[in-house]
Length: 397
Ligand SMILES: Nc1ncnc2c1ncn2[C@@H]1O[C@H](COP(=O)(O)OP(=O)(O)OP(=O)(O)O)[C@@H](O)[C@H]1O
Image (cartoon, rainbow, N blue to C red; front, side, top):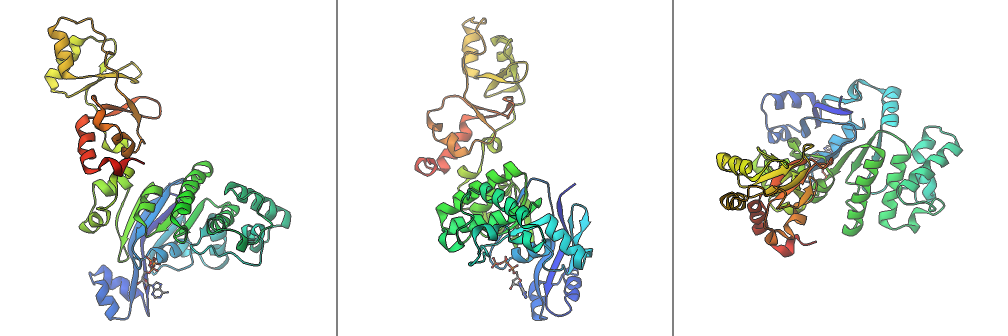
């Protein structure tokens, strides 16, 4: 079951917004609604977020991201459609019931930290808990734990003004973590930070997510940030979600010209991984087999390379047509198939790392999964083609 789902959500600002929903469903354009005094901020948005996922909502200014996230946390009632959290329809809740879900399930991190300047870092981290009526000692214990998680142990007595921007945002994050909700909503949370600190925070967020298994909806207008953070990304335009997919799906298979144009300048080498560019081998050969069998398979199926694997499918190496043909011709049929060992990389190795020595490579790369089993193969030509699109200085990091 998804932890969080949006089902045909609409948010229209203006008087009697419901008529705008009807008009849009009947094919009216945004401009037509505007002329009628209505602003459609979110139009027919549907998606599901799984537990432990980082789901990024990406779009330009005015595309509807903030409005969408405000509907998810119940700050804005939806004009139509539903927000469902752990099976509970938020849109149907009111008053205390709505406040309870918001308090227990969702916490929010804002762009401008939203810290109270005259309260200490510790008090700021514990702020949401005080509002809930939690005892002082419990509040302090939770706030301390949260500050430690974000690397601010020992800063509890300081005032926010004594901290750098990056540290202040960590306090904002600690406050959200102290609430111990499963869902974190982050609205342009790192946009006010300078680039180096921003990267650090992105890395820390991914790390925290892996340790704490939070479900995160992260809003950004920065495509690189979206690609770095998102398990999946929803691309928004003019209130509508144009495409939802992994960074790789969006790069390799954009659903519209708009998305294609948007991603055209992305450095693919930094986003794509070995898993995205590999081919799944249709044929493999067991390490106990000999060159005769390898030769036969290669000839019959016109293979460019044949991975050699053990019984448990861990790779031993790869045989190439020319060499195996020569061995068979010379009668060296007792040759062990492990003769040429190939380099192996894991599924999540960035393409940029593979390109670093692509020009020197003479055999395909074997890709293994996290159990060390053969998952795929990256032919030489794939690397060389990628390399020609990414000059070496661009990919060396
Ligand atoms: N309270 C409001 N009343 C009227 N119109 C609004 C309101 N809030 C947002 N809008 C309009 O809804 C549209 C979407 O705005 P929204 O703030 O959700 O976009 P955004 O993608 O978050 O942009 P930004 O990154 O600039 O915050 C815009 O046209 C905006 O002017």
